Length: 200
Ligand code: 5GP
Image (cartoon, rainbow, N blue to C red):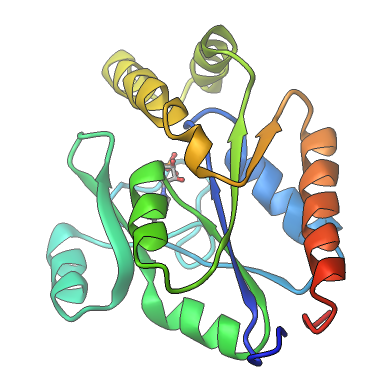
């Protein structure tokens, strides 16, 4: 908890296929800080193995629009221009922060910028990327979960997202999951040491 009794907000972005989700999940297991993952809402259909309430809150467009109109999202964006919406539930973030948790948002650049523009949370921002576009394309193709159309759209978005890397405080190259996790944990612990009132 910091001096105001609140936790910290951590925003992690990076192009799709950069291995963000894997890194974030490992980070939550491996880092000793009181990290909590915010589970986003999405209109995207679940991929094989994804669990409602764990990976995402999966919902149809109508439900998403209803929640959006009710102001339930801290930010929400249509990611990739393919018609799928993603949103950060406001209550999860508020509850986590009030409990002194370090709440992790794994969100796209547009969502991150929307939060940064509000100058409300003093978030810690990290940008994860695989080093180069060739590597990214390889990873997206190896995943074999998306159609050619989706892969192309994601690569285009990735290029656009890389241009906003400078808006983030920390850049982490994910050439190995273990190294990236260790690096992020080290950064967060260093921040905590600089603000010793933060809850551990
Ligand atoms: P995927 O469909 O591969 O799980 O995620 C696609 C993209 O949506 C990723 O870049 C991810 O970071 C982003 N994303 C996930 N949840 C949210 C959210 O709540 N808000 C925003 N703006 N982007 C999100």
